Image (cartoon, rainbow, N blue to C red; front, side, top):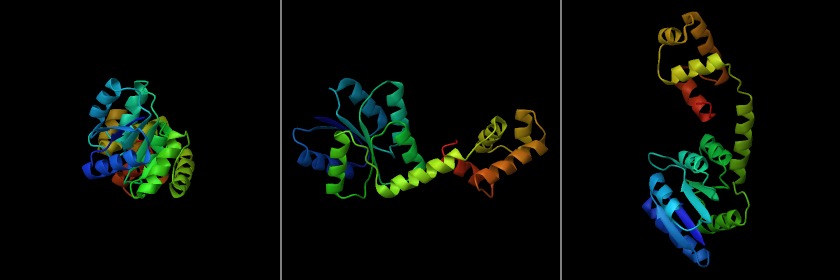
Length: 205
């Protein structure tokens, strides 16, 4: 059995190697501390049975790595493991095909059991995270933006003023203000920064 672990936290990485070698017979554990190295290993290594990815990787994070794997048609069972429980990112990785999300706060027995279930083809997500994902998904479905509102939102993300946005989109400043006001309501925001941050949380940006 070949398992690749992608994590830049050396102490946790060593602990996970120990856990895998003591709970899975005949396991061959490969490691990488960043996405680029993991891609090199995947292309050169024998067939992998499981890919364990830390969502908070430097430069190319776990979400982006899963996207790259999909783009390259590298179909490998993947599990996300992370100290962060940011629902938007967990939603993204699950929608990209991850077979599970395992919190780093779980003890070794829970992690081992979760990984065994994933190797058996089960989807593993903690109950509390699953409930949050369901709520998050329902809220996302309620977010309906027009093309023009999306255009304004993208320019808000770039920190542009209403005047500059009106010039770029060739619309009046009054129209821009109306769109911005509507975006504040959609994303329950009181200012431009909060609007952009909330849009990111819901995967709109």
